[in-house]
Length: 335
Image (cartoon, rainbow, N blue to C red; front, side, top):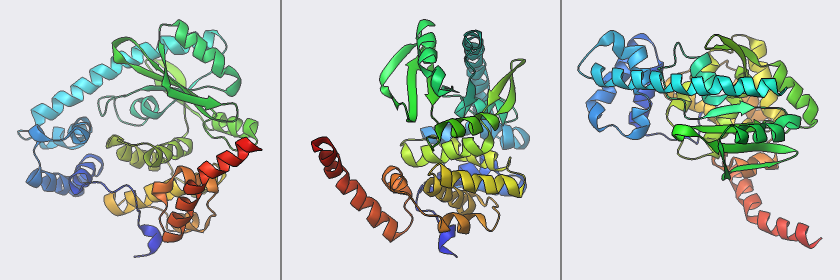
């Protein structure tokens, strides 16, 4: 097997791979994966990452197969559906308030995927409401959301004028909300932001049209999260598979590779694609992974996505850069 068809991260337990296959594959492949999972695991004693997949598992497979586990899995599916309805009922008035203040917002991450890409909202839980606003509207958006009773969580917020910025909030019932801007900080920022808004797609939520992040941008965000964050839910890999199904033409794949280079997201994207190919048998155009491996990797990527460094030279270079980073900061302060 060619070296570019292997991923170094993530390395999921085999039972998680089986459950992902049962929840995202079709026909006999899904049934076979489910049978392998049942040989080694039980619904009643499944870990939390596995439980998060049960709604999707029920909707895609078990509702048709039946079996003694169907009652429990259906319960998870119905709980997801109900909780997501409540969350979307909170979201719509908030979007109306932003619009009334002249602020356009794009829904992304969980809301965009659950409400826009899955057949219905029972497939998985929406963990957080994520909204993208323009740089010029970010401060006003944060103030408006605070005025609506959401409590800012400063420990989970970060930002600067020319870089990725997010303000996190907690709300009634333990709900979470994040306001994002500078989602991709490639210069010139104005052009990058304009392209992101141009690629946004219309999504119907509770009878209203809202803007949703385009599949290429959403896939890049998802791949970055996989290699930047920890303790990620298992269903993010199912989300990635769903997003790949939206890339229906060669031009879509070309744009994905080009944007990964421009937004300095090559390492996480190529590892995520390799993982989906080898673990879930997702078909990719034959040129995509080789093309991503030919692209130069920036110092920013080596620092931010060190877990995605998929060769010894890249791992060594990343380790050196991370070791030197405190020294470089000291030199900058002294100068």
